[in-house]
Amino acid sequence: MKEFFKDNWKRIIIIVLFFGLCITSVMIGSLSGVTPSALISRDETAWDVLLYSRIPRTIAIILSAAGLSVAGLIMQAISRNKFMSPSTSGTTDAAAFGLLLSFIFLSSQPGIIQTIFAFVFALGSTLLFTSVINRLKIREAVYVPLLGMMYGGLISAVTIAVAYRFEVMQMMSAIGMGSFARLGNFTVVYIVAAPLFLSVIYASKFSIIGMGEDFAKNLGLHYNRVVFIGLVIVALISAATYVSVGHLPFIGLIIPNMATSFYGDNIKKSIFDLMIFGADFVLVCDIFSRLIIHPYEISVSLTISLVGGIIFMIYLWRGINGNKSRKTA
Image 1: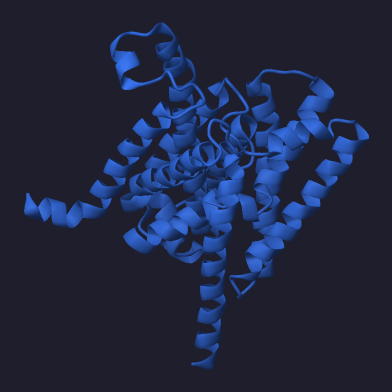
Image 2 (image 1 turned 120 degrees about the vertical axis):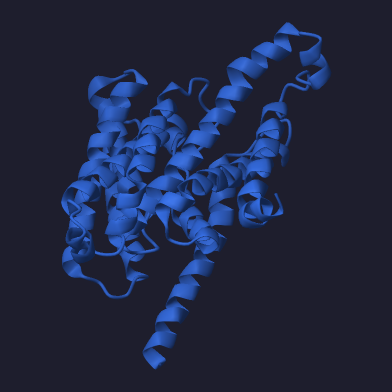
């Protein structure tokens, strides 16, 4: 038993923290009547709020965080660059553009139709960006996210211009602000469960392609097929989360880096821990966003941007200093 705890203490901590945060999440809200005593006494209002608002919201947080964390890990394995993620490669911006076009040309449509539009544009944009980056063969890893953010900024500028042209800028601004309170129906985010399951199946193959194309082909792996499946997973997760809860920055960038710092680069071994770790991070940010001006709340994307931006700058600074030290050596 002691050996088990010694070998798995990190996993045990994040799992215990996960369940504690989930309980805290479902018990926090603007309605103060949702208490353990009210639930035990079968208060109808308390149970309705719990079942139709608090629990779906918490599930949406878990799926969104786990999905974006895995999407970032896959992109980093495919590109062999620790600074790649949906938010630094234009994937999220392309999903927003696809959502905008679905709203303009099809007006009010079910979330699944909006997700299809967002997915197609996200996949096409990601394929284009990764192919360009691979051809450029950039040696400095820190330049890749900078190029990706420039590319994403270009797509975002086009999106804003089109939104102004068709007078739907207010709608895009509301959707782009990531929040788990802006929608009462999180049905679309459940789509994320499918690519998460697929990512677990292909975890070993993603680890292999992370070692390089030649190495993967020598092991008999169909490199291009696995890369395409990985990009499909990334695009589908990005599209479903954006349509459901809006833009959640930095998750796909910082969570894989933080997780690999603890568990190494073996995706198959660390993918479950990565999902839980990402969920813990977003749950903490969401709880803070709901408590800071309780009973009101601020957008969770603001909290994630603040914390994630600081962590990203630390990793970026380490990357720059690491490159300088290698050149000096």
